[in-house]
Each structure stands twice: as C-alpha cells, then as structure tokens.
Image (cartoon, rainbow, N blue to C red; front, top):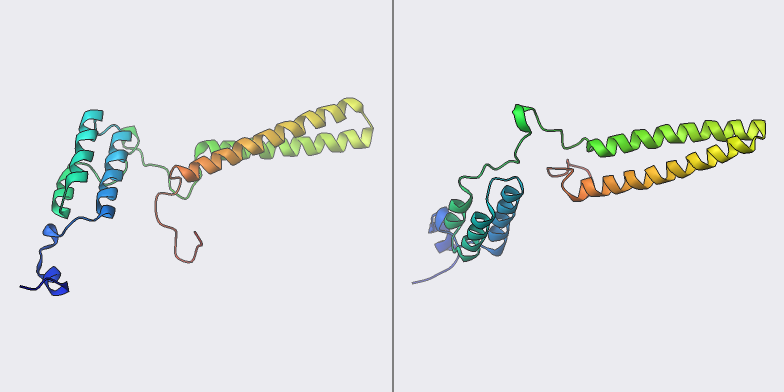
Length: 160
C-alpha cells in the first residue's frame, strides 16, 4: 500500500488532516465570537480545547458551524460602517486638529501684525492644543488599524 500525493486526492475533503493553521483560524473565529458575545467563557474554553484536539478539517468545521462567519452588525439592522472609512474618533480628531490649526494660524497672524503679547500667548496656547490633538488623532489612527480598521484584504496594486 502506498501513501503519497495520489492518495491525498482520493481522500474526501472533510477527512483531510487539520493543520496548525487550520486550528489557528478556527480559534481566531472563536475569539471573535467570544468578543462579540456569541459565546460564553466556558463554551469558548471548551471549543478551543476541541479545536486543539481536532485531527480533521471536518472536526474543526463542526466547532464553528453555528457561528456566523461575519462580525455582528449594529443593533436595529443598520449597516455597519464601510471598512475603507476611518473610525468616528479618527474623523472627529482630524476635524478638531484642522479647526484648531486654522484658528492658531489666524491668531499667529493677528499677533504678528498687531505685535500683541496677549494674542501671541493665545496663539502659543492654541498651538499646544493643535499638537496635542495631532498626537491623539495619530494614536486613534494607529489603534483603528491595529484593531481591524480595515476588515478585508488590500485592493490589488496597493502595498501592505
């Protein structure tokens, strides 16, 4: 009896041995379901144990068969935000930063043209606000990218 590539083609897909990658994908799906509130902690733990002990892809498929593939949508059937749009916190941070930068530029221009120490101090304080909001917005952008701000693969022709 031979075992080799020809024998793999004869094996039904549901009887194929599970790889470490297959188990990791199932565990990732279980983590997402747990975070979304679809699984209780004890059920999550039990299913992760089953995933680690599974030998075939069919056994892994059973573990997540009752869990929807996509993320839970917002309540009330509203469509989820588009993955190519930044999170609300990022958009509001950009708006605050841009508004504060324009106001700071106006104050700096007024302070320079009038030679007013009070206007200069106000411009300096507002510049500090601009710098702070830029740091906060940068942090929000970093976090939104780190936590799945983009839900799918990159479009063709974009660098990753």
